[in-house]
Length: 297
Ligand SMILES: Nc1nc2c(ncn2[C@@H]2O[C@H](COP(=O)(O)OP(=O)(O)OP(=O)(O)O)[C@@H](O)[C@H]2O)c(=O)[nH]1
Ligand SMILES: [Zn+2]
Image 1 (cartoon, rainbow, N blue to C red):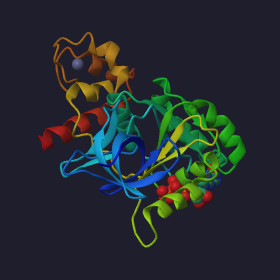
Image 2: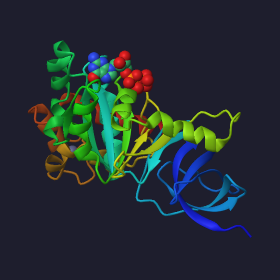
Image 3: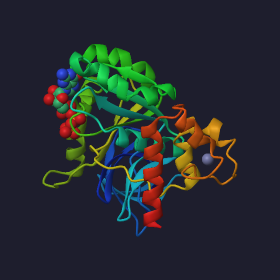
């Protein structure tokens, strides 16, 4: 009989995983049978097999699961996340649409968002980047400005926000996510090599998502692959509305209790939009997300 041990999923490679155990050892693990998909950040029960492998027998109940979905498929980012770090940069331009979607995804899963505006050394574009963030700034989402090239300063600025939590790092390509990861976890490369060793040489695999422990052992940082889309077709209307917290005080006074805030008479959200109390772009994004869901139903 093999023994069952509890571990943490620290890397996902398609349908198999690297699991870390309390003594620091790593094993290459497969789900037993046709069980649900595990995610980085999951606590799992593993039956140990041989020296370096294991079978995932059970996934412990999750606090949350962050994922995106479109009509074709669902893609899991990670499980048991406390904070979503959305990396933006002064240049190249970031997508306000994707940022808004990431916020909706986070809030609907009860994950706190934090925005990192990187490359503030590119001073010429800074005012414009800040202006693009003004709607979000008004919502009270913390925005940390830094320059990931200045590793120590970036680390000192950011670490106090990350301590003691499971943080998921998300960013479009080119925003400086890898540069930032290397500033926060200087031995990230060595940790990745360790996983390759645990998987065995010659086993080629692409690691999509990876959990690192912060250097002082106080919290984790999960690196996800760059993303170009953030479909939210799995969310309900009320989940989506929760992604626009600035609507709430107005929505409470709409004439119809089931108002969609798109066209109804007596809609206070539309009125607030007319009075520029709600950003045009924010309402347009809300309408787009609802529309996409309508198409997918
Ligand atoms: N000026 C400036 N450039 C930076 C800064 N941080 C990163 N960069 C540059 O931005 C480019 C993209 O950085 P990466 O860290 O590779 O970005 P990434 O988000 O991981 O992008 P992908 O690898 O495409 O997913 C590189 O040329 C970095 O040197 C910064 O603070 N200031
Ligand atoms: Zn309304």
